[in-house]
Length: 254
View 1 (tube, rainbow, N blue to C red):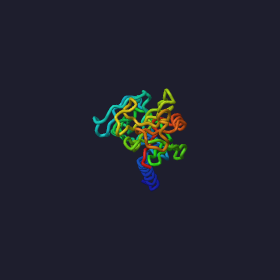
View 2: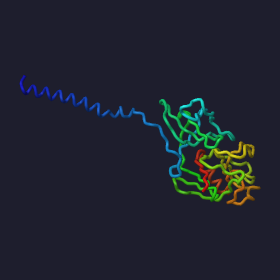
View 3: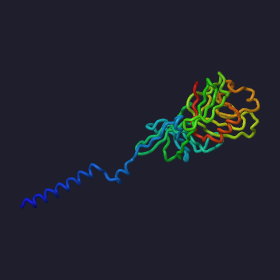
């Protein structure tokens, strides 16, 4: 074999080897597009708001992803007024190829959470965050980390305190008589009283509501409620129009 033909043969072999090596090291764009990305959501925060989930199919909410039989049922409607049930999303995960979201439930004990399949909810977002300070006796609303409302409030009495911790708006209920005890609106929360099992015909659910009738006798900045947070009718009406269900509400000692 001449040296010219030998050189050509070596070049052909080297070219074939380079093609194989290149395809293994650099997958095609189509192959990269089929790779499954981890399912995740950002945790609720004052700066960024939160993800919320509307329940579109009755679900069994697992207390733990790895214990399928331990949990509770979650329906598509709220317990009191039958509104669409929209809950705060705390976390998300993928297990055995199924996507799940962890929801803050409107059940006792406060802070109860459960995992439901991603396919059983419709996800949305809110940029709002509500902070209730028990020492300052104020309600502060932020949007995207910036304060948009701050108002004085009546909080729970020492014997019937407002529960601490993270909650969320559960229902927005317009009151039939705005001059009655609750004022024009009651924004029920996912949290419930740790002391009372029932009041007002409900299960002891805490709410942010207005002031009228007898409740107006308790001045803003006092601690005289059964655990609810009372604010003036202007601020509560603004919150009812502005804050969607699932908006985080954190009650702190501050």
